[in-house]
Amino acid sequence: MAIQNLLSLQKGQKGVISSVDTQILPSKLYEIGLLPGTEVQLKFTGPFHDPICIAFGKDNTKIALRKSEAQHIMIEL
Image (cartoon, rainbow, N blue to C red; front, side, top):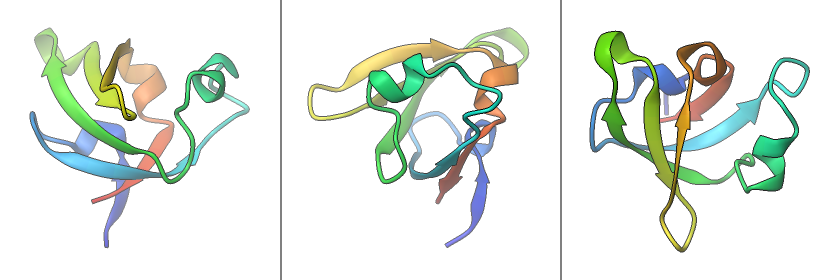
């Protein structure tokens, strides 16, 4: 499996989080469940691919992330 950052996903594509840079990103992302091993799916992107909307978890929770945040979340495709 290839490891890339979250920005490499295409709309509708899924990946599994392999690591999150906790020194850059707020701990709130961990608290809501964006942990290594979590499957995420890219739902929508804004103009110029910023922000992006991802869905994750059993209840298909959706959150928007800035491009500057998404580049620090590594996923396996």
